[in-house]
Amino acid sequence: MGLVTARERRRALLFGSLGGGLEFYDFVIYAVFAQTIGQVFFPADDDRVRLLAAFAVFAAGYLVRPIGGLLFSHFGDRYGRRQALRVSIGGMAAATILMAVLPGHAQWGVAAAVIFVILRLVQGLCLGGEIPGAMTLVTETMPRRRAFACGTLFLMINVGLVLAQAVQWVILHSLSPDQVVAYGWRLGFLVGGLVALVAFFLRRSLAESPAFAEMGGKTHAVPILALCRNHPRAILAGFLVTALGAATVSLLYLFMNSYLTGFLHYGASTAATAGLVAIVVFSLPMPLAGMAADRIGLKGPALVSALVLAAIAIPVYAWIASGESQVLPAMVVISLVAAAAWAVGTAVLSAIFPTDVRYSGIAFVYNLGFAVIGGLTPLTATWLIGTTGSIMPPAWLLAGFAFLGAVGVLFARIIPAEPRGD
Image 1 (cartoon, one colour):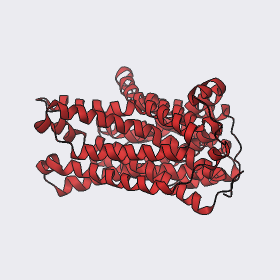
Image 2 (cartoon, one colour; image 1 turned 45 degrees about the horizontal axis):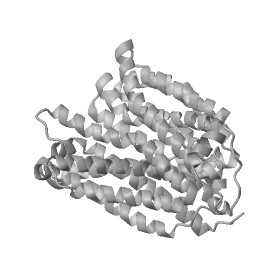
Image 3 (cartoon, rainbow, N blue to C red; image 1 turned 180 degrees about the horizontal axis):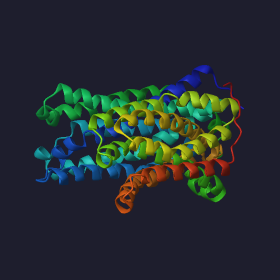
Image 4 (cartoon, rainbow, N blue to C red; image 1 turned 180 degrees about the vertical axis):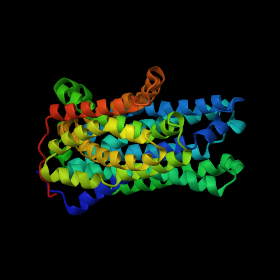
């Protein structure tokens, strides 16, 4: 068994987490400037049609993530994690920079929109390989601190989300509306693309995962087939755990603004403030929750936190609905619980697949879970609210998926960590 130096652990954690955060920034910066992008690349007489076109392209990038996960994990499980991660962040950097400088519909006509869509698909493919690859590398480099590593990684991913919103705020408050359309939105893309390019070169110093190196080239010709044939139990458990995370992120941090303003008719300022504070509270405790789980074992903390999240979901939503002033404290409480549940849950994902198919296993369940559960849960919640006349369907869905996550943890077989100097 190979030993890993402290410097190698720091590099893996820093460059793996930094890359995940930057790629998520590059992916999300599209969403925050969707309306402006619609004006530049998808001109239409109807504002709603233009915005719909822009978000359709956003969704396309989201839906190709599972394909990207399969592609990058295939090469990551066959030839190594390090090179797959360099290619994923390099592809994301190149696509984002090209989107920043691409002429709009006024200059290139339909060709501009077609190229923009292709670049968006490249972003989605790269993101599908980046996060599972980073999870694989950091947990294999520091296996006895894998929950702390995953907590730090997802803290940085959420920082990418907050950074995208912050860059949007600066641009919108520094430039006139015409300047934002002319070049302001491009600055947001350019910043993310250039920083991701720097991360691409920094990743040259990453060492290969010691667990992969120990395999000595004994890999599967088609890792995903080996995964499906030999590890169906791990796939099911991993999907259920991912469903908890996907439902949590989509309902509490992506759909919540629309829920508060559109269904509860609270003020936009209240919703925005609660959303920003909640994502910070959700993110910051993740490394601490992971550190605690590393000391006492993954399964217990993951199970308890998932069950607590399931138990408080409906009461917290009722608390939110009791008055506009109650939104912020309620979101803080549920975000603290959600932080523990998802931080340890991601470590469980990395601990249920063996080294030979770990990248493929994480990529498969993570991307499938977020594409299906993350993509459809807000739509389902909206439909249920309209059908039942109740404002509680998001709570029912969150409680249900948190309970399924607990079932997944119970069903999971945790592979013991092998010490490598960490």
